Image (cartoon, rainbow over all chains, first blue to last red; front, side, top):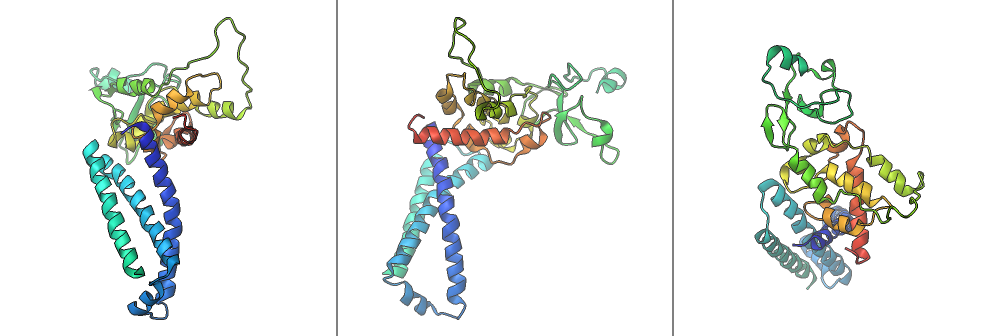
Length: 112
Length: 204
């Protein structure tokens, strides 16, 4: 991986962290607010199904996680376990795709 | 150290030259902290009446307290730590305003004497042997901000990425322990900014 790509990864991780700071705050605040009066799962689903706003919000959230987590893990596996080279990056790309698929499956699960 | 070598154990190997905090030769690990032994008073660092003196961390030991500094200085070269001017001797001196933002940034980092205290204190160096380290990156930063220098983009390429400024975790051990009160962390943060700007301008 060349230096330019490594720099892009670094910027992508910082940018996705900024998005996540906002998303996590909204997510936690909404959860605390929503269950405060004892909403059931069915009542929550009735509010999320077909709601394009929540679909857009959680799609952005999932994509930010997909970008952020594998780049952070790249440093962790390199520095803690000494794992370098192309195999590591292929593994992390696979992890990113897994996060995207599982995350979007969950997002669509409460939308459709 | 001199007392130990002269009186207790004449075989002890350690490195020193000036004894007044100018040369940077005598950096060692004293009670777990990298510092210049010449500027360290025993009564300031002794703990429970005990003091352990060890070689610098993150560098291969040659003998006793003497470390092999080659890797440390090779990384200065890898970070393109050599000045490369634009003018020839036939031209007039380039004028640099002492209070310009660039020159103030250079001044903040220019007093490094290469003692490797920062390199020895840096956890990222111990985790990632390719990491250029605080001193080499600080040197690169002072040249990136030097308006007389002509190799800015080449230098930014040399210090970017996994082996360079982007691996810094901003632990600031280098800044905390630098005997010259330099902040390599600030220089590394500056390099991250400059590399990002170069990337956005499609110059990297």
